[in-house]
Length: 194
Image (cartoon, rainbow, N blue to C red; front, top):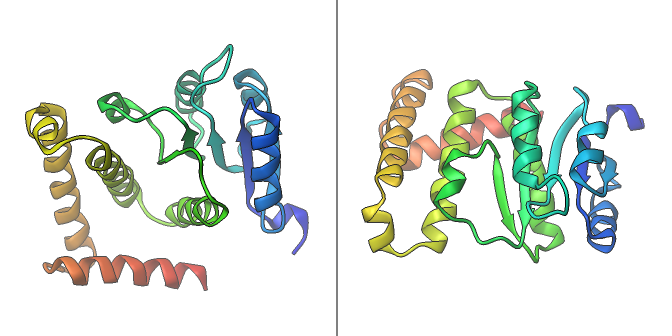
């Protein structure tokens, strides 16, 4: 496979050692670009970039601001926030596709990039579904049941996930069982890889 055929991953990370580690982990399978700050990241970004690994806390332009500009400019690239910042309910308003808390492992980074690339194969419903489920899982992993129960935004998130699941179930032929639904989504992923 030539360099141009490899998916493009842009690493936007202000810590050079961390960026180089991610580069070493990914370089065999992906064309990797690196940027040391938000401004450089936006300069490196073009339509060929498939996945952005974006540090949330950087001097100058923060990861949150870079993410907002990526979305405002209409780029459809998948964005994973890779950060030491503990997630809070503010993530519900953010346009990322995955949220990884540092320190991360090579397998975790690979799996995230693979998952984000697979998502480009699905329609808008599925893309929104995965993004919201990721946010739900992130919040459930870091917030207490009481905090979740008190959050109107979280309850609206759960309702929207249910609506999307129903819409996707109809699109996929009326699958009602949760295990069958998940198995079907996995089957679609496997089919798109071939």
